[in-house]
Image (cartoon, rainbow, N blue to C red; front, side):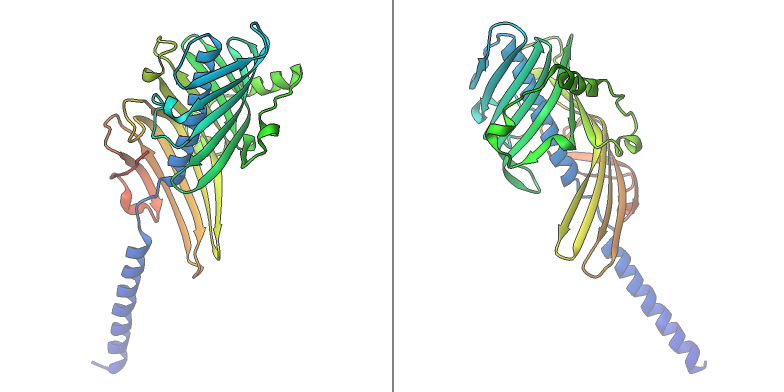
Length: 305
């Protein structure tokens, strides 16, 4: 055998081994942290609204308080929840307390401004998280809420945040957001840049312990760390959480699409669609996966709330 073919064969084997190692390093399980943090945020806002509706209707809940401008409607309210009063919150506690300012058109219709103190997510820690002008409406056994990314402020000024001064047209504009069609597909929800939450009280108004929280919507997160940059698009459809299971969602689907660039300019691309099931095991099934998540197809992966 001539030397040239031998050299070519050695180079081919080396290139194959190098490529296999690169592929092995590239393939990975999806990190659900951005989705988990969004679920925490949405569920905490939903829980706060749930408490507000209970208090405005005269129910007494431990470790909460309410001040209202007058006994009838319309009215304004200022409500507080401390951590020890969050025993019915459907996922693990992240807040030391919540303050809720409300502008009520009637006992079923409100616009909220919410201040969450010492909010602690899995990927970041914030002293204060402010959420402004959240429209909410109650119909029979449901409370519906709309939350857009434009409503969220990091470390806001407390006095400015908890002052809601909206005229009639602005209130109607906020409530109109609740009439927007809710997406029923994760590939549509990822374009929303808003989340729609539903609270179902199981016909036991005032008993927060058995309420079901459902989240649908999507948005985009951008993270830059030195020369690393990452864009995460995410979406959820009918993602349900209940107080009975604090480990994982028990229904629905979620999508996560990551586009990133590392120091060595090696692109990271991956899409994963999670499917949640009723078993409270701290996992989710991978319904479909591409790119760097390809090897997770059809498997159960950790998904801990």
